[in-house]
Length: 435
Image (cartoon, rainbow, N blue to C red):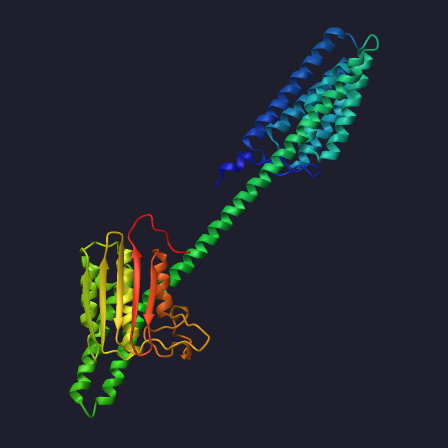
């Protein structure tokens, strides 16, 4: 596919052989237009010089040679324009044209000004040093030809050809270097844009992986953990209390069914199953509290404030927060009761998860302890000493999810007095995520 900037490719850098857009076989539209202009100018100057020679020297013995060389020059130049060919072919044609031109100038000095198009052709085809050397030689020959034509000494004949050649060469070299610098800048911008796009893709992939890990942790992993505890309890009571064991099995089966629904929902749109089919956050939290009220743990739900329809992301984040917090309460705190409190204000929604369990341990003397810095569980008596490297995902995941929405997470706890987790999410459109 052709890139829109292909017609803007600059000439090669000074001092290096011309290539790319200036190669005869790889010319752009503008280069073909310039080549046609130079060829036309050369043929017109050649025809004018030939006409002048015929009018002034129609009976000269050199006329057949002059006409023949003029035809050869015109044919070679026009053929080169019609079929550019390779770079080597372009240089061979230039050598043929220059050689014929030198001969015809020596025979008839009036053909000297045909050198002007040849100067531009040489600058486009040759490396800068070689082109400058050839332009100097052409300008010198033009000066000698003009002096031969002059009746007397005229300083213009001595100064005009070198000045024209120097101006043409200087302008061409300047424009070439400017085009090269511009192309380097464009290349840098394109490369930077590609690198930025690749970085954004990598960051997006990483963020999506982290989000998926949090979703799986707060739904499937917590459910599997509860099932494992229930099955272990059923196994211990299988012989001594079969009815209790069957109750544990039925509860585990219920959790498994809910987990299957969660898995299907995650596959479908990654939304919590309790929020599906238009269920609001308050209803989802009430359902969660009823489902988690078992095995000695009673979970109550209470809503305060107006019944506000929350954004899907905020509702999902708070429901996942409640799921993760209750799972940690059940597994680690030894609590008998827990409470979910949803508070909806005009610009903020807050969720409190409180339990009457063991709470977080006191910090070591002379030290401090931030439960958000690493422990997994709300109410875990010693989460930092837990050896399992696969744990430790709960509270950091909750905090990361809330921070993506500009929210905050706070925990109040004392040994033996339970813990209160407070998740807050702003509802104002102007709120920004925390850094």
